[in-house]
Image (cartoon, rainbow, N blue to C red):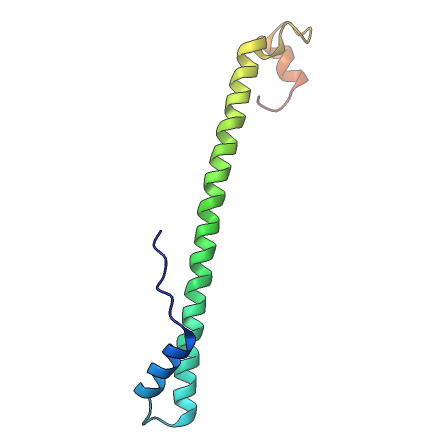
Length: 100
């Protein structure tokens, strides 16, 4: 992901002040304030999106690990038919009502 161009707040304010010299003071300050607020909002949104992307990566990795453990356990003991004393898949489904 590309990083936003960082500019000091004072240089933005100076450039904006030069641009809005003819406007009345209240409008000029509001425009400058809105511009700074929009910049901060974009930065927060970018950080949130990066956090979500990191969470997706972490959860996919965790999911793959869990799927691997399930596959390994299923291959080792054939769903517990021999070790639990259960004779059939029907008995197993009654003992474990949620899908394995």
